Length: 104
Image (tube, rainbow, N blue to C red; front, side, top):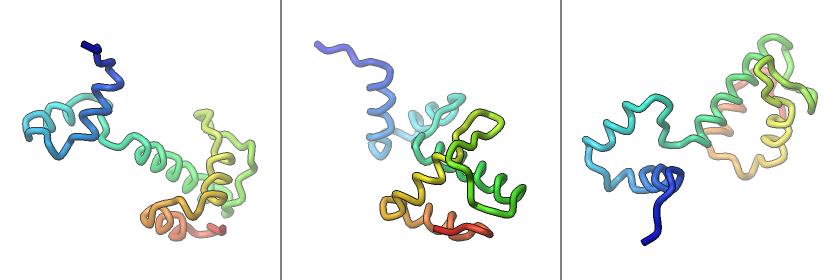
């Protein structure tokens, strides 16, 4: 019998959320740091960093190597959003398009 790693177990919970009992869902959501969609959460954190940059600089022209105070490479992230525009979700496109000074 194969032993499930923690990473595999977490991935299974996320993939099978619709089959989990309400009690299990509540227990998972009560865990500090739990998220159902870590990639979406990471994208939203980066988006908030971009909003701050635009507010401070009145521009969405982030230098490619620009890092935030926390060490996040915002310039690379912005570059990737522009490069992969066709792969973004409608919600992500709408969020970016809603920003003052945003340009593709």
